[in-house]
Image (cartoon, rainbow, N blue to C red; front, side, top):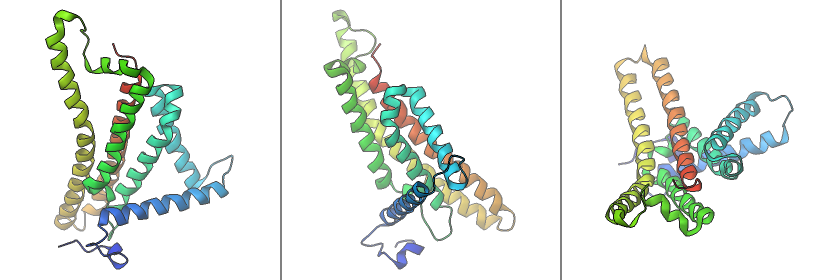
Length: 227
């Protein structure tokens, strides 16, 4: 049985799952906001322009500090888009009658898996076949061949686990946030709402940042020289 939500009025949850309908809704909202902001850009930002400029500056600084100026700006559109989409999707779950698209493993996997393939692609693009050195550990002499092989398979498994951990971490935190907020609202309906909402906002912001930060570090690790 599906949870009855506001979007069920427009979409049949048996045919279009909640994560897809609310993901599309967030995308449409962001596109509309972007078009409106583009038409009303000001030298002195106000309102939504100021809010989005803070986000843009923060994510750009995060990318440049960890990946470098050149590649940081190259990957910024990817990282900035993911952060804003995840943030708004998380916040949507705080609105009564709405759900978080990120409270579903399919939505999160749709972001985590491309990140995995992108940083592997750019690792080979920047270093060529030398990118394999990232998987061999610090010792690369013939007597240490067995250790190199063991480190190689360990690193491969570690890299394969990255999209899984990115997906499950965001999914688990969004589900846990939803359940905790629901329980607290039932137990303390007159006292908890503001406290509960504050916890929810912090959780949404932190999980958006964590997903983006880990993606940034994976990209940085693929681009940097192996030591």
